[in-house]
Amino acid sequence: MAAKFPSGDHRTWAACRALLPHARKVLDYILENTETTLDRARITNKIVWYLIVTGEYAEAGEIGRTAVVWMEKVLGAEHQDTLTSVNNLGSVLESQGKYNKAEAMHQRALEGREKVLGVEHPDTLTSVSNLGLLLESQGKYKEAEAIHQRALEGREKVLGVEHPNTLTSVSNLGLLLESQGKYKEAEAMHWRALEGYEKVLGAEHQYTLTSVTNLGSVLERQGKYKEAEAMHWRDLQGCEKVLGVEHPDTLTSVSNLGLVLKRQGKYEEAEAMHWRALEGYKKVFGVEHPYTLTSVSNLGSVLESRGKYNKAEAMHQRALEGREKVLGVEHPNTLTSVSDLGLVLERQGKYKEAEAMYQRALEGYEKVLGVEHPYILTSVTNLRSVLERQGKYKEAEAMH
Image 1 (cartoon, one colour):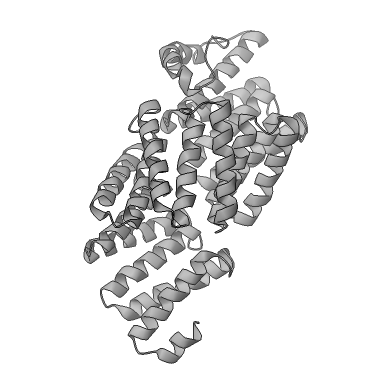
Image 2 (cartoon, one colour):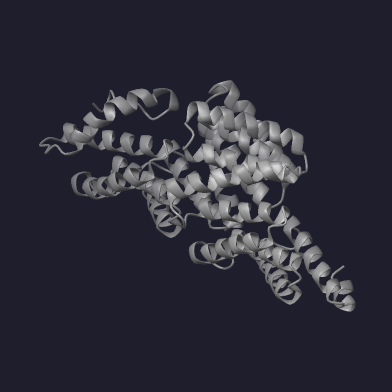
């Protein structure tokens, strides 16, 4: 069964789905020799990975937690298959938005693999990469950049520049550069990743489609809306075909398309996309997952653009409270909600409340992102605007 169960590539999903009931039964067997024990360990890791890539996180987490406990007992805490289980559980926890628990798992997997396999082993570099993603999700961009750079350099050396894992590191570094406002550098990384994936994996592979949407997002950041929209439509159609309409990657495509439609003033279409993304994320992840809260925030922004200020304010308040709880008060996404709430308050003439929000967002961004990030200029512009509306011209002038 260990040899027959595929690795989880989207082209083998039908086979994985057919074998899954039989593989689950193997997990319940009482095994008496080392070889069959190792086989079950490998089956378990393949099952968990398949469930991760198909977005079935609840079952992946349940099996993943059981697998770690069982493998520690049978194989030992430092066995290679145990560390794979720890790594996979970290990925599940991250996908569920449980970042602190995920960080502990990825850190443990990394330290174990460095000790057992060495610092340049491909599995070790996978743990390096996963830790970088987790740090980025927590808004720890400087730490994440160093980790992603290490993963990329290691993979280029060990695996080569065209290996899919190397291209994943290229993509991850591109996302991080985008988060830091370095859009041109990010675009170059995303183009490199996309062209590499198309060559190595094909146009419809899940990783290729992820690169398509990543490129669309950074084009949108630079105001290249038509190019961005074309990328997001391509990604959405590909994801719906390959992954299905409820897969998390498909929902991300829906969300990204909503963003670029809003940028072009296509508010009705954008609102429909954001509602679809929100309902999908709530179903797959629950109401407090970071992705769900991002959809709440996006929906608030498009409602504000359509002049539905009361509904928009309620959405932004909900997003802010959720992000403060889940991500913390200084996370960049939380600060975005602060800024968005300020904007809709200003639109309603609530200038004092808006000023307080803009001031909080500006101070937070300066602390977390640095004074050269594009969000700083936006925050300064917003704060200056609301000061002028209140007749505080000297204070507004000082913001220049």
